[in-house]
Amino acid sequence: MTPPASRPLIVPSVLPADFANLGEACRQLEKAGADRIQWDIMDGRFVPNLTFGPDTVASCRPLVELPFEAHLMVDDPDRLLPRWVDAGCATIIVHAEAATHLHRTLQTVRGLGVRAGVAINPATPLSLVEHVIDLVDLLLIMTVNPGFGGQAYLASQERKIAAARGLLDAAAPERNIELEVDGGITTETIDGAAQAGARTFCAGSALFRAPRGLESAVAELRRRAEEAIR
Image 1: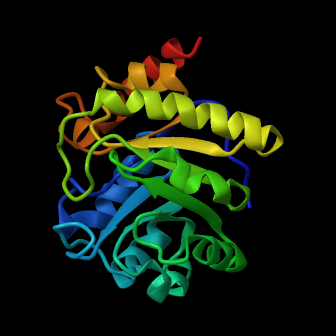
Image 2: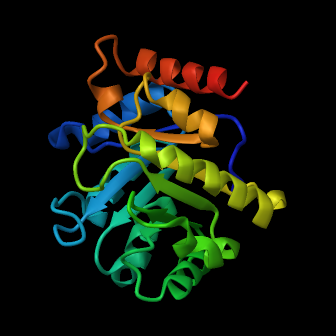
């Protein structure tokens, strides 16, 4: 498994893309310089929205070389874990709130030979994942409530991001566990998240709706993040 990089990573979500042209969206994101692609997997139960199944993800896998990550916003993440691996996802992120036995779920993900990530919602305390840090390669702090794209960034979560940075640095500094933020990331909000300690930034609407195109938008987000952490 490839260790996470310390430089800022831009991870586009394909949620705002044209669902009839997801393959082309992936190609354009790769051309634009994205670091990997996030698939927001929603089941209509854990969140009030329904998105992609593993067959959809698998159909796009041969089209690009970028790594895929599956962000499972689903009630029962364990049920289809092998399917997401078979679909070509190199990272699988589960929600702490949705896993009945979080430790076991993360063990299962790692046992499938991919990177394990855990996500927590805005109202969820960091303490919920404190005792599984030894099993994660990535910690995702939600900066919106999951379910829909285009929501406003919750700056209140920057205290949690900073606390997460401290937790990861103290618990396993040698592992360089990735700290990702997801929700409302734009050129106006990425500074605060970066200064708080995030180094991976999932963005959707800010990229696909950028008037100057994806390549310019990815470059500008990366530039703003780099400036914020100097």
